[in-house]
Length: 255
Image (cartoon, rainbow, N blue to C red; front, side):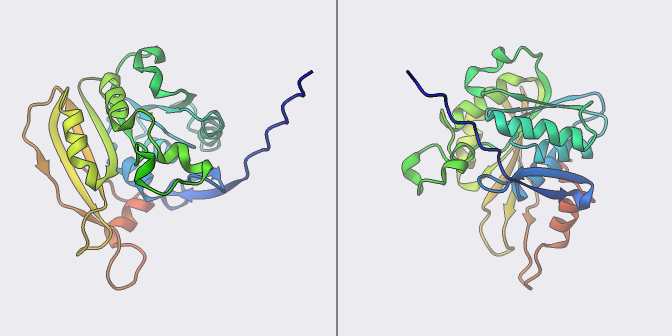
């Protein structure tokens, strides 16, 4: 006779404010917590009125909801393989009165875009897990492993995004700067017209992140855009540009 499984303990959450207090985000106290990368991805979303945007791996909805707040005319769908995080994302959408334009589904991209049962989107975006080789770093805490380790590697994420976006639609992602060559190689199978914005922690330090935007079927030349510097040397927390982005007073434009 087998014993019943013990009930799952509720996840302890914190309530954080984004975009200068305009958004409220409940997210787990322990494990992966959204930060600067989510804020930059949201600021880079330039979807127009009436367009449909997909985020793969939306977690509790930080980038998804911030992008929706920035782009009030667009519709958003977030996918998250962790059912608890997806439920938290739905509750965050409701708490911010965005449920009419923002949907969150529990879905594993490993199943392929066809399994989603949706028409292709005008724009897709993601902050893919940064590592796909467990031997490349010290093992993260179990609560963070799903957000840090990419099953199927970066190729699985770029392949899903390319399948999910319509012709002439855009793919936008933020990732480690040292994976830029891999990102371009993987996306170039079906996309072009690349635009790259380096993200530097300090003006004199190498870029640690890159924002990459590509157009499915695009043929334009690659553009290396002016960098974003996050922190000044004088000890202030953020540069004026980074602070304006975090508060929602500025975007990261592609034009």
